[in-house]
Length: 290
Image 1 (tube, rainbow, N blue to C red):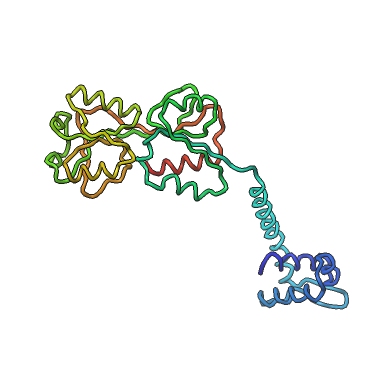
Image 2 (image 1 turned 120 degrees about the vertical axis):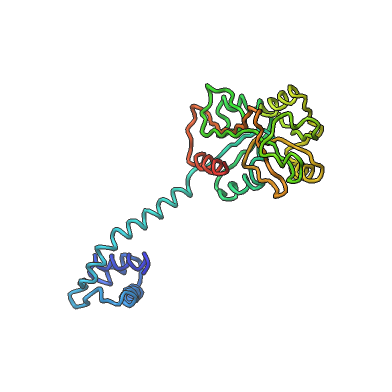
């Protein structure tokens, strides 16, 4: 049983005649009759009493007529809604984030969302934090992912994640035997720093200088696989903030008791701009990684 069969049935019931119904449906009487016969065969009940006076509904036919009306109305509404969506103006979503921030997400973080929304026009920008001040103020950007809050009067924080900065080191590193570490433990260690320009790295550099620590290897976040290899093979140590970065099984993390520094991740939007459905969906998607 399908909507086309039900539509033919309803029309025949309303007209009381196959010939009149066929004319209204722009079908041959033979084609309409075959459609009704097939419907009766599928349902295994007679729907019409056929006589010289025309068509009369059986009790089965009357029951089907009462049920078919809301079903067909729902079917028509679904078709109408889908067509309306198809004819909508193209959806757009502009995203910005500081260089290096995506190391906290799986490699396919953005591509997975983009490929799932082929009807959306995505605009994606990656650059140092400060380059987005004007874009946020003028509402040119829908969503900005960042590690610090600025232009506070102009933005709305949609999500704020915090996690203490911790050390990452190989399982066989001597320091890995300790359940937690102090900053003094890192003196004389080979430290790896990242060359991203953000508030967290700036604060971490200040902490290192204060405690006589200096990273001797500075790498880009794009070289995270190299960071892991150096930690595994040369007993280097690095500092991470996000707990969402997947670590190789040979690498462990340790809390740093006397380091009062948190990694922060924020999803912000312009305060006076509406949050569209596609923006809400992306925000939920991003939050699912924390």
